[in-house]
Length: 589
Image (cartoon, rainbow, N blue to C red; front, side):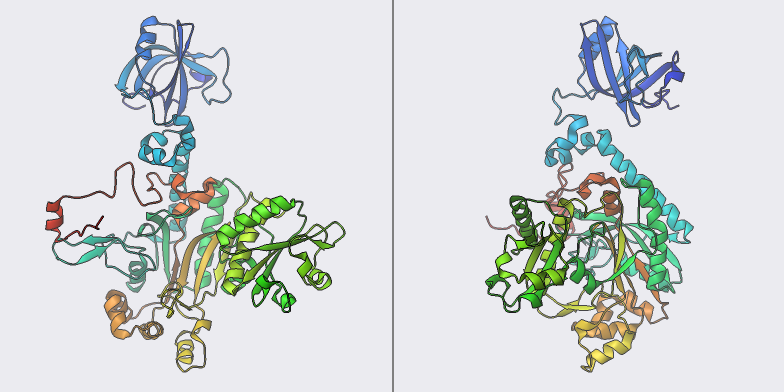
C-alpha cells in the first residue's frame, strides 16, 4: 500500500471482487454509452483497470477532463459481465464512487496517441519523451534495460569483480573520437574532458593492486549517430582483470552473457561457450566484415583468378569476391532491387549470374563467365545465385559483406533469425595506414600489447618485419552482426609502450606528456592485465529486438546530437562565458 492508493492498476483480479479500492493513474480513455453509462480506462506504470459509473454528476465531471489527466479513483471491485482477454485485469472492473483530480492535462490535443506513439515522427517523440514513455511498449524497453543492468551487476559480482566508479572530469586523451571539453574556471585556458572510456583509470586500478574491476560506466564521445550508436553518451560494462590473459577475459564474458541473453532476449537461444574465434583477416575474407552475423550461412569466395583474362572491363585488374546463394527463387527484378540496395551501402557496383534448374549459368554477366571452371570452383548446384563484387581488396570484401547480409536475410533458408550468435574477432593488426594522414597509425587501441612483445617491435625496427604485419592481443565480441565491444591485453611495460609509440612518430617524451599517470604508474611495477567493455545500450537493443539504440535509452538525443526535450545544446549568458574566460567567435552568415 502507498499513501494515495490501495492497489496498482495492474493488480486487481476476481479474488478482489467486493473490495473497496483506491487507484491512481492517468485517464487513458473515456467511453460514453447512451449518455448514462461511462467507462474509464485508468493506466499507471503497472497496467490498466476499467472504471464504470452511471452517476450523472461523476460522468459530467469526467467529461470535463482531458485525456491523460491524473486522478485518484475510489470504488468497489466487481466481476465484468464481458471479459476482456487482452487486459490482465480484464475479469474485473471498479464501480466508481468518487474521484479526485491530481494533475490536470491542460491540452485538448496530445502530440500523439500514447498507445501509438511509436508511429509518430521521431522528433515529436523525442520532444515529448515523457509522453512517449507512458506508452507501455516504450516503457517496457526501459524496464528491460534496468533488469539487464541489475543482472549484469549480479553476474560480475559473482565472478569476483568489484564495482568501482571512476572520474567523469578528466584529461583529454586520444581514444579515437572527439572529446567533450569542459572549461576549468579556476585554470583559465585549460579544459577537462569527459571520458571517452575509463581506459586509463581501470588500468591504473590494476597497477594499484585491485584484481578485478567492473563498472556500468558512462562514456562520452562527440561522434555522429547511427542505428547502433547514440551521439553524446553511452554506457558500457567496463571490466579489467590483473594477471590475466585473453582467454581469461573470454571465460568471464562467456559465463556472464549467454544466461542474460537467454533470459531476457527476444530470442531465447544464445551461443554457449566457447564462442567461435575468428581471426580479423579471415573474417574480412570469409564474411566481408569484422562484424559477421553468424546466423547467416553465406560465405564469400575469392574468384579473382577465374577472371584473369576477362574481357569484361569492370572486372579487369580487380579483386573479385563471389557470394553463392543456393536455393534462390528470386526474380530478376527482385535480384536487381537487392543489388541496388547493396550498392548504396557498399558504395560500389555489384554484378550477378545464376544457375537454372539444370545447372546452366544464365542472367547478368553470364556471357563473361567460363561455365565449367566457374561451377567447379564454387561447387554450384541448380538455382544458385552468385553475387560478384569487384574492386580493390577492401572494397570487394566490403561489398561481399553487404551482399551476405542483404541476400542472407532475403532468401529463405539462409538465416536462423531467432537466436543470438556470438563470436570473438581476434588477431587485429597493431598498425594501419591512416586514410587521411597516409602515415602509420594505431589500428585500434594504442594501449594493446603487440603479439611477441618487444621482440616483435625490434624485428620491425630492424626491417626484418613489416609493421603492418604485426598483430596485437586485441579482440572484439560480436553478436548477430553487432560489435558489442573491443578489448585487449594491455601493454603494461613502459619499454614496450614507448617502442610501440615510436612507430607512429611519438617518442618517450610524448608518451610521458600524453599519459603521465599511466606511464609513471607502470614504472612502479604493473601486473599484466586485460579487459573488455561491452556496450550496455547495444546489448539491450539486441535483447529488445529493435533496430535503433534510441528505443532503449530513456532520454536519447536525436541524430544531430540535440536534446529536443531540454533544448540542448543551448546558448549561455555572456557572464557565464566571461567567468570561464571563453570568447565565442560567431560564424559569419
